[in-house]
Image (cartoon, rainbow, N blue to C red; front, side, top):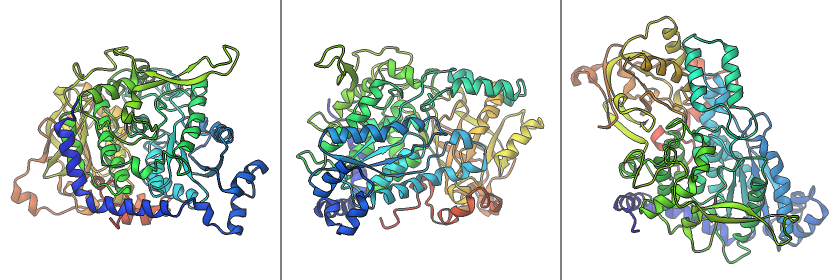
Amino acid sequence: MSPHPRLIEVTARIQARSAATRQRYLERVAAHHARGVQRAGLGCTNLAHGYAAAPEGDKIWLRAQHAPNIGIVSSYNDMLSAHQPLHAFPAWIKEAAREHGATAQFAGGVPAMCDGVTQGQPGMELSLFSRDVIAMGTAVALTHNMFDATLCLGVCDKIVPGLLIGALSFGHLPTIFVPGGPMPSGLSNDAKAKMRQRFAAGEVGPDALLAAEEQSYHTAGTCTFYGTANSNQMLMEIMGLHVPGSAFINPGTPLREALVREAAHRVLQITSHGPDYTPIGHVIDERAIVNGIVGLMATGGSTNHTLHLVAIARAAGILIDWSDFDELSAVVPLLARVYPNGKADVNQFHEAGGLGFLIRELLDAGLLHEDVRTVAGGNLGLRAYTRHPVLREGPQGPDGPPVLAWEDAPAASGNDQIVGTVATPFAPNGGLRLLQGNLGRSVIKVSAVKPEHQVVQAPAIVFDDQEDLLAAYKRGELQRDFVAVVRGQGPRANGMPELHSLTPTLTNLQDQGFKVALVTDGRMSGASGKVPAAIHVTPEVVAGGPLARVRTGDVILLDAPAGMLEALVPPDEWVAREVLMPDREGHHHGLGRDLFGGLRHTVTGAEQGAATFGGDW
């Protein structure tokens, strides 16, 4: 199938826009590669320091400098369910490397915080910035120049984007991402959400809510809804950075261990020591970024990636904006119904055909670039990711170790209520829209919003903190049609926290028959749900953005199908209004927030990725 004209058009525009910055990036990658094996340039003292703690057998290989050495960067901690399985991975990787005449060293750990724990708490104001801290931590881990390749171990919201941004700053190194996988299914996400709504309405107490949450988040592994964490795993597949089929295999299974070991084996095959040298700076090009956007649209993925993909692209010298997302969304059909876009979880999505089936559908429709470089190598391009990993009986029979193999994704969807086809999609276009008007530019996730709720025209109620909205609800002041304008929540203001704790309250009001919507320069969760929400409004208020002109009582029009976000105020009055800046000082101190002042001052706008790096582009 020939590529879709819109795919060609958007890719060509990105390539033209990025020509100078991408060329500078590739020149840097080439210059670092030309220096050869990095540790060969280290002095004797430096080198001895670099492997002083290694086992004697590894020291022999490291001293000789003829065999590749893998650097492991991990987000392991044992408090967070998604990261706990990563504890076992370094030992497997080191064993696999030795089996192939190479070595591996744990290069460094990066922080991993969970938005599920910090949601609605002061710690959420560090969440977005943690992405760039992780990127810097990755760079620190790799800066010792001891490594020929990298394995990045991570899963969740800011961790994978941060690891990827950091790895791209070492674009000459082959890099594979190694996920931990989702926890087995527990209480359904739909049932969990309904319990949250009942708690917000005062119908149940905290004991009932906690019992439901414990049934949902019940063991090691990633949350099972299709939020940012699982959108990350989709992106690593569709951008060619996973061992194919790695995304949604549960932790603690023989197949997961086999895939971890295979990642070590595969990354050794693509170092500069062999004929298939595949540096990450060449894998992540304009076509891979476009493929990532297409995957986000086709799956109804996380709104957070309208920030993260922009920042990831920028780290590789590629410049994208929300218009690119919007134009691709217009032609990419929605092929997945996974909570919050449906009732299924990612385990059920995987069982119904999963990413292998979905990627093949998009390739066959010409909606993905097929001829791209991936860590899977060979001549299959992205077609390698239409296969699922399986364990088969090995040469020693049933009593011997199984062998990892791949088989084609199923010919038909295993459940057409969860995984659709291009011929029979759940919607003719993608899950995200660009909204524009006199309130600025913003994005909205409509894949979970019913058509009758996608247009809201109602008076504004202005809040400067999410807590004020929740308090007004408890006082009984919000039983009416309104647009909640929650401002002063952008990256420069207070780190751009997610406002997902507002979801149960706004959903309750919508379910009662009121027309409600949210407009904010902050974020919502990757699990943004049924209420229309214009988020990431840019410019943000503290940068002089137009939300600072909104007054309670102004009529706001949010029209997702038409792509409009307008304050219906006479133009002369609008221009003449005073810009009111909320006081954010109380959000800049305590619980670590003091340390992030420099990032708040240097961060770019939401449409530029809310990034604290890349100014030299």
